[in-house]
Amino acid sequence: MANTEVEFCGLNFKNPMVVASIEPTNSPDLIKQCFDAGAGGAIVKTLTDIEDMAQLTQNSKYSVMNAQGNIIHGKPARDFVFYSRSGYASTAYKDWIPYLKECQAYGAERDAHLIGSVGAKEISGWRDISRTIEDCGLPMVELNFGCPHPAMMPGVHGGSMIGQDPDMAAEVTRQVAEVVDIPIVVKLTPDQADPVAIAHAVKGAGAAAVTATNRYTGFAIDIDTATPQIGGPAGIGGTWTKPLSLRWVHRIHQEIGMPVAGSNGIFDHRDAIEFIMAGAGVVQIGSVLMIKGIKWLTKVIEGMERFMDEKGYHDVHAMHGIASSRAAGDYSEQFARGRRYAAIDHGACKNPTCTVCIQMCFYEALSQADGKVDMHPESCIGCELCYDVCPFGAIAMAETTPAQHAAGYYDIPEGIFETDKFTTRRNNPESIDG
Ligand SMILES: Cc1cc2nc3c(=O)[nH]c(=O)nc-3n(C[C@H](O)[C@H](O)[C@H](O)COP(=O)(O)O)c2cc1C
Ligand code: SF4
Ligand code: SF4
Image (cartoon, protein in one colour):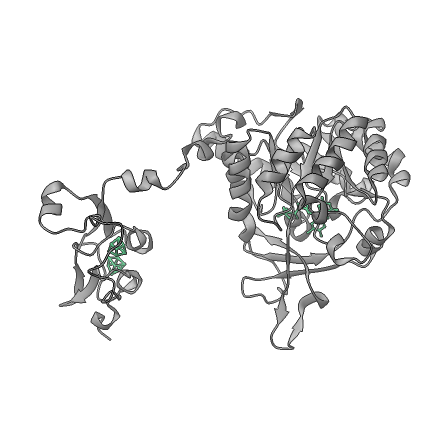
């Protein structure tokens, strides 16, 4: 069986599945359930000295929507949208002290780690809570510079407000690094232009890793009642955010090379593996455990083991960053590639019953004539859209030969701009019968 162990910031994890700082880690009993479900680690819900953020959790609003933006009544699908508002740990951080020790010991017996999380009022609070976490024997601390909610609470400064300011993020990190020896992980916000710059800044200030990322801030509306869902703006996430999160995991992994914990968009093991292939050393699983239950985590872990066995990955390291290293660095690589054109297999094509590709080609390269797809290679730019969408595998992308170019197949125009086709270009929907 594949080896799922990973090393992250000098710490060994039995598997890369870490429960994110979220409601399923908001009590000792829940944290124990996460360890029982097989988590490699669990991050306690953000410990705080901000009363308003504790109170906000006691006034939480959660809703799960479908891709249309309607509240789901019943079982959520994998494309769920989790729209919610909650704060930090609802119990004061000092009251957590005996439980942090107890849960850390419980995790250690199961070869797993309890990780701390901090969101404080002032610099002194960031330092005190981080030190408390270390004193309780926790081996790692996450600084929550990603929470969307403080920005919407008058008089509260924290979360994404810090994560949007490289100088402030670096200063808080530096202050915490002065008082703890355990690795510091900074949780980034995606609600900004450049999380990579924040990762740079906090690395320079002593962070060992970053988490990419916390959730976005959104605004969702019920158009039937013309009212905002759950009363107004709130945190928003779900699997739809995954490619957006992966972009930052990939860029931080490639450009900075510091360890990254992947978060924001995991439903099952396939999503977790995407994060790992983008460069995440561990992944954080959050809202899916609120809609499927903590035991869902066991299925995610088993799914990853199965995948690794099936694909012949003997350890997680073999998957780590593998897709990131294969990604195009810049688009000049694309310009340098040989032209391709769409070649139709008329035997496999179901036209005229199917017309999908004709509707989608915006370069006048496909039309319908005599009940079959007519291909106009002089217009085909090789964009691959028809190839992707054909439900019957009837389109192949073929290399354009010099003889075909000479015969008038589409070639890169001589100048930078195209002049001859742009005034007439359209697609060919009128050629479709019926
Ligand atoms: C209801 C809820 C509460 C959360 N509370 C916290 C928190 O206290 N601290 C924190 O760092 N992140 C918090 N998060 C963010 C999650 O840890 C996680 O980063 C985010 O949900 C994205 O991961 P996911 O797609 O697996 O849910 C919360 C998220 C949700 C949905
Ligand atoms: S590859 Fe693009 S341009 Fe060519 S036929 Fe298909 S959709 Fe049209
Ligand atoms: S999408 Fe495929 S099957 Fe449908 S018309 Fe185009 S080539 Fe034929």
